[in-house]
Image (cartoon, rainbow, N blue to C red; front, side, top):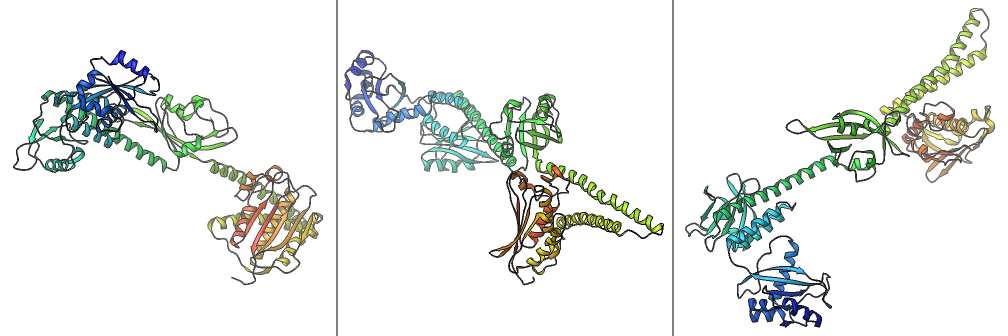
Length: 622
């Protein structure tokens, strides 16, 4: 028995079990860690007889050799292709003998971490047998989802081995020509094969011979396969005529046709799926594709963001974190969910609005579900699209509230105004002197009505870009004094604290519009601040800006309210205590931004609110 550093117990096991086996057997130690050394430990008597003294000594030598490397390469190839017949290999290029090997793991023996048995037998150059083994491999590969190009190259390499040829080429049919798809072996011969077949007249029979170059004797074998679109013919250099039976070649052609056609279909399907996903990702709505069993097939990133996770597999309520409600917020039973209804009843919908209730958050969505039918008209899938209309729904609600409030606000001054006018007319008809107080009150209601109409007109001008400013150099100190004076002299003057600038502050502004803004801020502070609380109005400068601030002593606002406070029709906390059209701050911000300024709010729940208006300093008219 020849060994290389055989351990005592391992040697006993080897001698008692494997040394006299008729099957040529080798003992290997192949640890699976990257830094461990692979070793060939022993050969039994049959293996030494098969390989000869020279090869046996080469395998058991302490240094790396061509033969040892071939054994370990065969081991790696068998692990890379489990369940497939092992490929033939040579231990020495000089002898030309080919072998096949099967590998079996053993329990650990002494310090052999990963012992393996290598069972070897000679490989006979029987082309018919080799091709039959290859056909079995191709049948197994038929069920794998492999990349088409990688699969084609692997198949070309195995064909070259099985046909025992220096070059092989698989060509695809392109109309009346053939184009190279995969090739293996000698690059120069492969290129000559491809060049010869591109414009060749391929006979109709299945296997035929062509000359590699015009005028030469036929030395190229051509096997017709299934045809386009994946492939057309298999060709190889024939040093000797093929000895495979016609039946085997026919089976090989069929197996190749099935394998490559299936791989081509899978590749095409994968490309189509990729294109579909790319299209879905560019759709501005959440899109969901599901089958008639309620299984989710595909959805885009907007749908993923809408549902809050990326593992949506089924339509049932247990598979996503929300319930579905109608637009009034009433929870719908599962059978009335639009997605579930489509699966159970085949009923779609068009632009129906629902509310997705996540508990703390609700989203309004506009949903459309359409069936996807096959060529026979049978529904196979459903395509659902959902557009998040939460903001639009909120704006619509605020708009409806605005129309209600606006109607109320416009009617409010008309009622007393009508009464005052009627009273004045009665006094005049009776020949009495019209009471000036009646006229003053009527005039006050007219001013109130004008302010409401002006607000609506300002909103219209802003929306259409027709808001015009009459700018001129203005003393903000004098303007602020004029603005605050009616408040200071009014019945709530005790609540106003004016901190005007010590020196003149100038800006190029439309004074009437700035007065409109500041008056609105003071009015809001008095309305929504704490009752009898102070309102501080201050003018100062900061870098290149004049700053007018209005600070109340109210209950403050939440972050959510601050985010919406400058939107049209939003009345915020005011809606809880008084009616408001929600246009004052919206118009104010537009006016300040038209001046190149900025309006900002500093507040928090339970604390005061300060609104600051920043205007560029300057005396030069634009």
